[in-house]
Length: 173
Length: 173
DNA sequence: CGGTGTTGGTTGTCGATACAAGTAATCGCG
DNA sequence: CGCGATTACTTGTATCGACAACCAACACCG
Image (tube, rainbow over all chains, first blue to last red; front, side, top):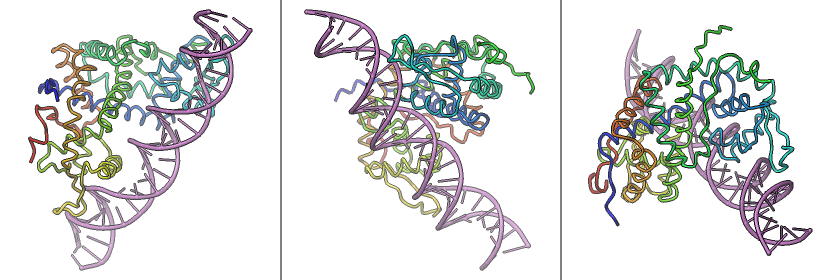
């Protein structure tokens, strides 16, 4: 066996262990608050927010999957549950009859509007308020550098635009 | 309803979206490589590494759960599977007969020794090699600050010591 | 010593995701 | 056209983790 492995230095190991801990704990914290206060997972929240911000509140399933960093089967299952709860609607895409469009309903809009303040508060309390402005910029750069490795083609890369002020239901038609 | 929500600024939103994407994509990438090359999840790998580094290769279940950022039921299920595969052994703790000790077996040591180079390579390729030394230090500080919020009591907080050189099977008795 | 509360761990059930397979529509190309 | 390849999505199966309920052992206290 080739023993040319470059083992981790003390600094590398320390940073890596903390990053792993963060990726283990953060999703659970986000899900816990949203499930408790709005009966949706963080993934469902992000998906609904993406639809709310889209033109006509509508997106193709594939586009929504990329936007939410999800596989298509996963999104398909989630969409069925959201549709059963009346939060979204699905219908065949007129232009490409293979495709499916998803639209967030008024009930869905109300739900995310109600959930947004609590979620933003959770994000602030658990993450943003712990960082200085310099660290916020550093986090942006670091996460960007890592994402370039994890998702080289940038097929997923969700763009920001999610937390603007006021109820989404008033912004979109 | 109180409308005193402090919505996210553009910079905050951008950094947050990237952090969320990172926490969604990184675990999958780690699991994919380890499952493909060593038939274990990243969580199982971390648990086995913790046992390998412990005195007598042995830890109490509660201590191992804290070390791996896991709940006790989760660890219990994982431990049963690892025991079925002969990678660990469990036996009652002599000093406290409520407690259970877990020990990594020789087969378990061989497995992580074989898996370590590929895993380290994955960590380097996906994360560490994308960062400058300054960013490594920044990541350490940022993750530390966030973990203080996510785990205030520091009951979980795994300590680093996992990626030193040479086969673990030669280091521990 | 009993009794109450707490700690340590396991088990059962349910929900959610990954993966593979399947279906339907579109595209490309002779 | 017409046939294979690709795209878009859904469905089925198996696995994994969360949560709650449970049991056993210790701890403290009168």
